[in-house]
Length: 116
Image 1 (cartoon, rainbow, N blue to C red):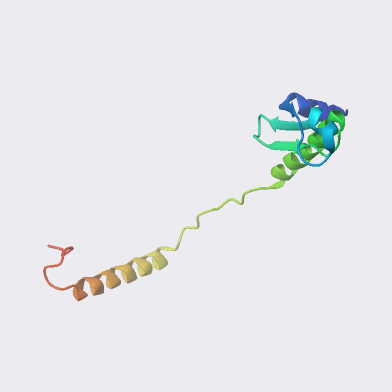
Image 2 (image 1 turned 90 degrees about the vertical axis):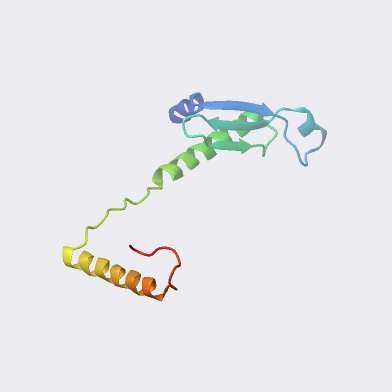
């Protein structure tokens, strides 16, 4: 096992269990399925392809390292707020005021929201 996979294994909770599915009696009695939970990131991988617990552990570690690399590559774009020019902002607010006044005029008298 390489050094980085060894370090990765130390950060994981390993659970071994019996695999299910086709494979007959041998598969039903050996605990060859490996379930890894990477504690720092919360990622979980499972491997139960082979009848060898050791090979399944290697496969699970490889899958986990690939998942961690993919998760590290995903970068959320930073959203920066752009401040509008004062003229543009005043025009927008004037438009809102004008529309609000029009809506207020369309209301029937006595219906809530009148400015006193």
